[in-house]
Amino acid sequence: MRSFAPWALSLLGVAGQVSAADAETSSDVISLKQEDFNDFVAANGLVLAEFFAPWCGHCKALAPKYEEAATELKAKNIPLVKVDCTEEEQLCQEQGVSGYPTLKVFRGLDDVKPYQGARQADAIVSYMVKQSLPAVSAVTEETLEDFKTLDKIAIVGYFAEDDSESAEAYTSFAESQRDNYLFGSINDPAIASAEGVKQPSIVLYKDFDEKKAIYDGALEAEALLSWVKTASTPLVGEVGPETYSGYITAGIPLAYIFAETAEERTKFAEEFKPIAEKQKGAINIATIDAKAFGAHAGNLNLDPKTFPAFAIQDPAKNAKYPFDQSKEISAKDVGKFIQDVLDGKVEPSIKSEPIPETQEGHVTVVVAHSYKDLVIENDKDVLLEFYAPWCGHCKALAPKYEELAELYASNAEFAGKVTIAKIDATANDVPDSITGFPTIKLFPADSKNEPVEYSGSRTVEDLASFVKENGKYGIDAYAAPASDAQDEKAADAESPSEAEPSKKPEHDEL
Image 1 (cartoon, rainbow, N blue to C red):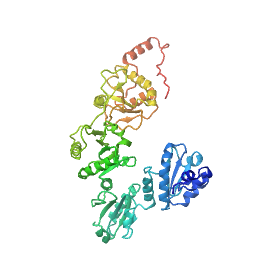
Image 2 (cartoon, rainbow, N blue to C red):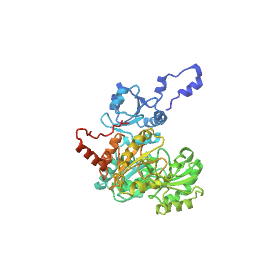
Image 3 (cartoon, one colour):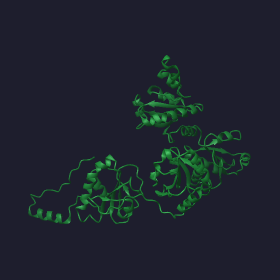
Image 4 (cartoon, rainbow, N blue to C red):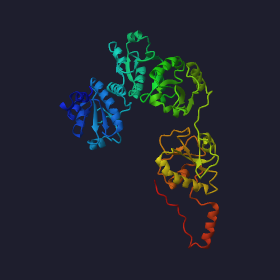
């Protein structure tokens, strides 16, 4: 039930007012405070709690979706609660809240885990329904049809009553995936026969495409999970905030069809279904709203202003394959393009700045087209900074990073062994996983395929120490050049009382 306060006020004008308390009681989300939180959680078997701050933009965006989910879950006796952390600071500290909104699933006060689903009403409902059931629910002839509709995906294992080995393997798999899927089990051979399956079999019921898929392979967790992911993905789905993560972590390439209208997306979905059926398990195909998410086309090396458009992303290889935007998006032509990409006949698109004609300064500038030569295919320890031009921390690091590079450049003995480099990760495609800026990695000369990420303080001395400790050559950037060392040794011999110990320059930490 949604709050009726705005509707009532619009009718009554100044003739009446709705109090904050009245508006609160109209909500199906229960507000809790320090004094009643523990008692409420202890009295309910399953609770979803949101810890929020009124000023938080993400909390405001979640509010109507959380309310909608609370209304639906109320009928299933699964309460959704909220705690205002600006008023209940001690309670939020006790619950380890460090950001807003934080959502946690409580099964009593001693069994708490973070909510792992999407922040959408249907996702919250789906996730909490799964949490309310055992890992594997016993399904009967009378409850089977209802069980199939409890969620978009419902998985049922059909096992003979004396087949404990299969049942145990299935239960173990269900335990590992209970946050993601709904599992049931039936041991009645008559029901299996009516469903057109043999024992043992696993059936995945869904509310789209062919409605169900049957697995009769070995009950090995890895193979079974791969099948479930493939079978539970629509032939041609739609990429959005709720589905993006699932597509990217599916382990296979994702093909995007960018279109600006719902009518176009529906049309393309129908045209591409035969291709999706043919390539099922090798690639996922999905439409995407170009008006809402057109900027993502630029991430795939497409022109983000020209639609419809098509591109393939292979997250495992960090590779992108944009389809020629001057050509029409036809199922026939794009189908051939998909096959060519899968067959390795299409080179991935690489966004790159021009290779600098000359290197200015001591920090080597790397671009996508020079990445292999300067970072991978050489015998140097390469410290590489992945930066963004707009990043304040990157700007603050720049003079110290230049100073670090100068330490190595000033000693001829180090020149062929250590490179201090940087790459603009917003203007160049990089084969590395970058989650923030700046990211600094050392590519040792003897293990380029195992770069070491730097996590220390951003001082010149600490960075130099990192290169020394993790590089192949173990070079100390502060070691004096051989000629200087000989001069110092001679000077010490002539006048030891006047010789001063060498000192490392002092540097302020960022």
